[in-house]
Image 1 (tube, helix red, strand yellow):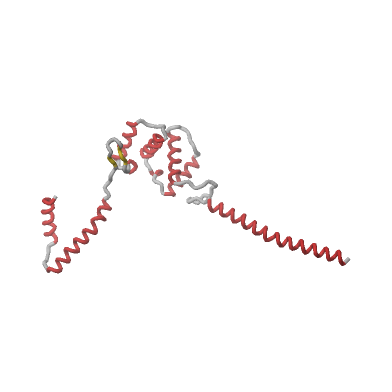
Image 2 (cartoon, rainbow, N blue to C red; image 1 turned 60 degrees about the vertical axis):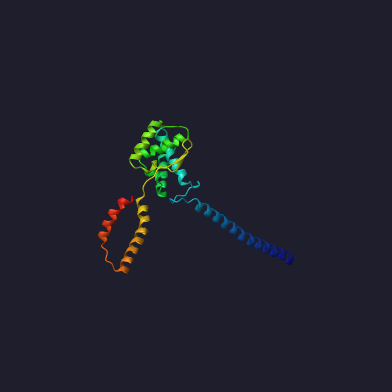
Length: 211
């Protein structure tokens, strides 16, 4: 009958509108979920192109974990991580440019002994530590170079110093250029011919008396 046909057409039209309304919402929700998944994946990409659910650790934390693994393996005779995890950690530190993985065996022992002493579990005596530190200092290792530190007893500040010849040379270059410029400028104005070798000889004779 015509009324029944009109009701059926009206019901189909309402259903079609409901489907049209639901489809954009479902599409928007799928797009949001996909975007969130992409953001999560992109946020977990580490510098060495590895995707992991863990958060990125700092270089200092990875270095401490590396030294702790060495200390546990060599001194406690137990492994706190698998060989694959240790190799990945070492490769990650090398990729980050860490100098800890490039240390010699004695330098690694010194760092491990320092960390163990701070933790309250010394792995060597004071005499062995001082001997190892002295040997590394004689070999010219930079790991034993200490920064400024103060003593409450003597009320003095101590620091290990090394001569930086490159900075000394760069500091003397401007003064040398200015002195030579003035020298040749005065020579050009006066017209007096100056023998450079003779001036150098006179300067070498005068300097000992000025010091």
